[in-house]
Image 1 (cartoon, rainbow, N blue to C red):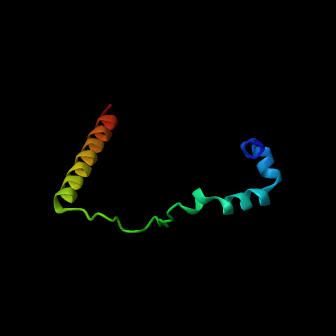
Image 2: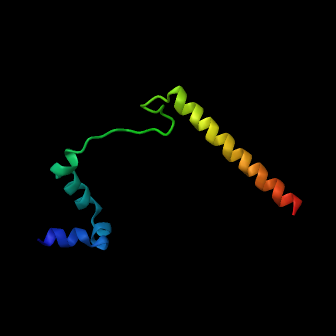
Image 3: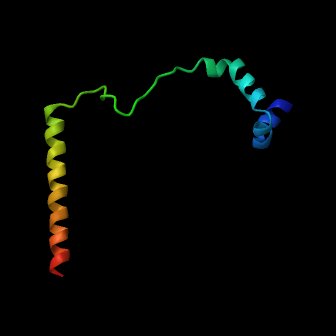
Length: 77
């Protein structure tokens, strides 16, 4: 029970980082986690359909048109 109390205190974690690393290495729960590296420039796993791309382009065009209208209204006032 004392180890739970010790590791819930952040100051004890800072004072004994070696002990924290040893505990992490022995943890079955941490070893059981699946590891998967994600890179920000990876391609998406699900390719976009032509309908999805057309819908996205229409949405972008509508937003751009709204921004132009807002800018024109601001300049005229």
